[in-house]
Length: 213
Image (cartoon, rainbow, N blue to C red):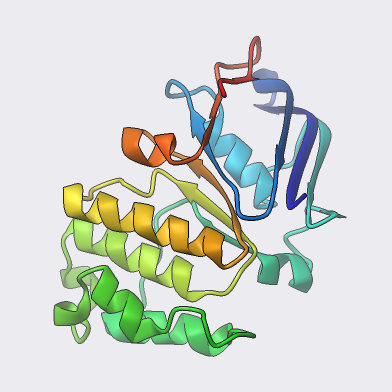
């Protein structure tokens, strides 16, 4: 088991968004979280990333409690959740190279920065500043930085946002390749094709969080 969630309750003050939720995610498995806006999908991802404390219940990753302060946890988990703050003095390519420099892989089969820039159609803008990119290109750069970092658990919040059909297809391919590298993924998505390539779990709010298949 890579991710184990047991009887989890999440909320903001007195407002409960998820109650009594349970989920296990195995190696080489992707789970798609589906549900209406406000159902708690993003909050659940933030909890697994160690950025939102649960009101009740437990979350473990690779057998250990979630702790964003722990170096081992940070090496195991990569999360693409919120808007990224760019370094205006670094180019697109240098952003991805920096991620690799700070997080060298243990195996030769992990993506290298140039490969990711090519896959995500960023090779032609590799020398540009991120502030000059379109919203879709910035989303592709965020994805490149996420996949450049070796990890065991991938947390994605609407990775298809701002992407065209070709970009969404690339994301699906990257997720499949990530699973082939023994990773596990938890994804909040409105992309039907991406969701259907995963085990779908419906998040309906605090009353009835349930797996659909």
